[in-house]
Structures are given as C-alpha cells and as structure tokens.
Image (cartoon, rainbow, N blue to C red; front, top):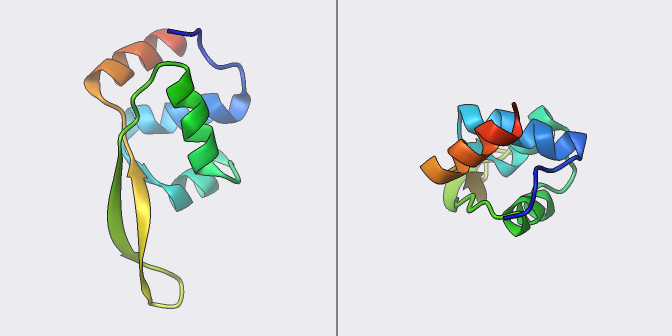
Length: 85
C-alpha cells in the first residue's frame, strides 16, 4: 500500500467519493479533474479498489449513453479516512 496522494485533485476526488458514488461527469465537475478514469487508475495504483459500475444516463442531448459510476469499498473508505486526517 502506497501512501496518501498529494495531488489536490486526487484528494478532492477522495473527499467526494467518501460521501457518495459519482459518475465520471460528476467527478469532472465537482472535483475539477479533466480525465477522471486516469485519476481513478492512479488512486487504484495506490492500493484502492474503487469499483466502477457502468450505468446508463441521458446526455445533454437526451441520448442514452453509458458512463462509469465510481464508488469506494468499505476497505477503501477506511484507508481514505486515514489519509484525509
């Protein structure tokens, strides 16, 4: 297990994910990250699981598209809470 991330964007992602699962677009808007999947991969490389469920949503044009819904496991939450202290 690697240590806590130092990137402000990664820390913001974790603060939001501790509270609730978020889609790729929500992470981009709320956490300010331009490429959420690569950020999630970096956090996974630090030892977190961060499962992704593919869900269907409507895009801004009303077209149904698939997107990732990222969440933390119970183990992830425990690790992240320690990191955020």
